[in-house]
Image (cartoon, rainbow, N blue to C red; front, side, top):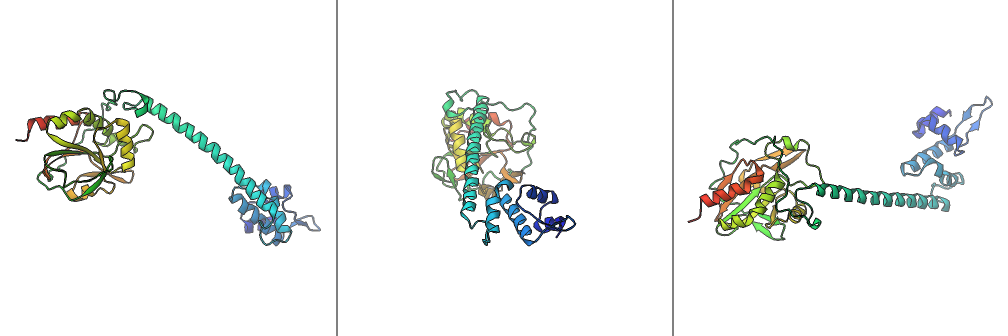
Length: 319
């Protein structure tokens, strides 16, 4: 057969076949007119070269496998030299993986150092005081409008729903105990070493979860003194992610994880979609004796929201 037919049947280019010939991996028979004549053995050899290439074995290292076939073995890796070829390829790949892993670890370390260096709430072990120095919100953030999505909430009973907390406890929303519990609900908390969803700052009410958490942290004792029995943050992020946030921001209260947005389904809470993910809209529930007493929605700006809750508590003391 001609070179074009061989290339087509083996699934390679004519140029590749010529390169294999230049390496002596295939040696076609020459016709009387000087043309190359390829046979089924050549097709098998070229297919084997292609298959080995898909495993990451370069063409130049396929000779032991092809010699195994030429020796009459059924498979190209039936010979000891072929097995040695596998081992060599594995060793080389292992070295590359180790080098890439080391490089990745170095890049991650530099990323975290750079991110926390400019972070308003740096990592816990960096020795900086996060209680007074945290990110400020951009001045041009869009202001969320009251769309009435929370008007139905005051007076509703807290649903029978169990959520995992960052302290390891399971919290029942309908069994928070007597008195007032503050549950501030937010979309997601970003981390200095991770990107936020595209267009995050252009979504009204999305930006500001870290600053909101810092505000609740800084006014936590005042909230308790004003009548709040407990304070919780709540989002759809998993507990492990939230635990990192609690540790990094040194939050004195636990976060609750609701990855399936069960609370939104039970109470009809407002949500929004971004990058194919549904997230809570920012709002805060004041739950008293198992009933939603008051709702803050929409919330803006989030970096002073705890102070807004504090003012409401002081203006509405429990008799």
